[in-house]
Image (tube, rainbow, N blue to C red; front, side, top):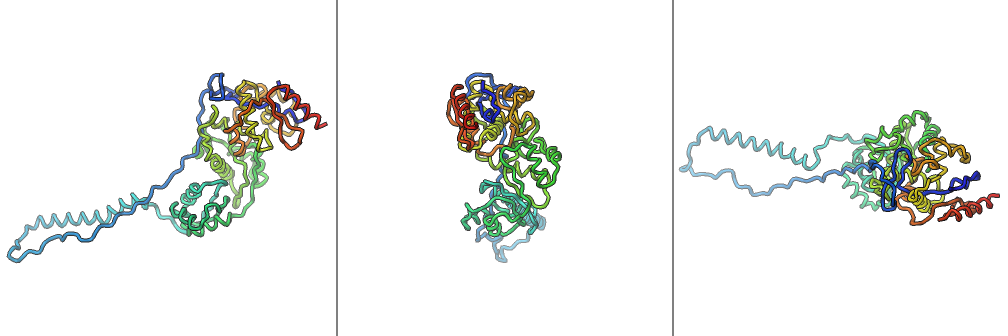
Length: 426
């Protein structure tokens, strides 16, 4: 029921939320916010790989002094000749016990303590990336897995002694295996020591646009990058990609500035972006979904919020409009999804665009798009997880010209806001 606008106001007509899924075979999930509609077939949820922790080392307790003597001295009158066979048997038994004590027990002790690891050559150069927002556990795991500081406990102790908890910086580092812990922590305080060409991926880019940025920066063909950017190539290492729509990494190449030494491959760039996505969602419990949506649908909604908002404080309100429209069974009518369906471009959405046959056409198809339309920021993901509690069904750009919106509950209010915006542009 929203009016089509040719002046840019139209892209902000109405956004709703529902556990509706698009007409591409998806039903409308049930949840506390959703009252009617049949429940969709559940899709697999996505999570961070579980973190692997090292077993604590256990030292072997030392024995006590004061062992009883092996024999007592007899007087010459008590001495008797012993049979030789028992003596030989005793000697063999003693030898076996000694062998067990000398070889078997230490080996078992090393196995229990975790010290029976392959030897690591010291001084081998290792390049690592500390993702933005990485926790202390993540940093310790990265250092330990790369044998820079073998024992996470030693890393923690060094950070505490240097009072460096809040001073560590993300980025690319070059260390050596079995390096002095104080040197490692000091370098993390000083900042990245790897210089290279940086790649900046802004929020809201598509995989196609990301491929073009990679080509401009590193000379990797956009076609080659797109050929590599398939969810099936990475799902074994990144479980949150399970069930990604159309085998695409759309929505998961996290927007950030990256730096790579030498000439990175498409695979290395993609893994750095997926690592960053994993880091950003680590504390969001995304695998459980929210409000009746799956984790994949949350990322999809976040991508719509990302493209619809330029004022961060409004993202949770826009999320509420999307949820409310979905709950009412209203089409989302989000122009950003139409732009994605037509293959991009900066031109105004036209009436012809609204007739595009695509599962991303949210004028014709109810519910969310079948997959994300861009890479959202973590703030948009948080908004999708925690929408404001409103009754808004419509919004349009405000006349302030600062990217903010005016929200309304009724169509008449919406029309008045549209007219106010148009008057401000004339």
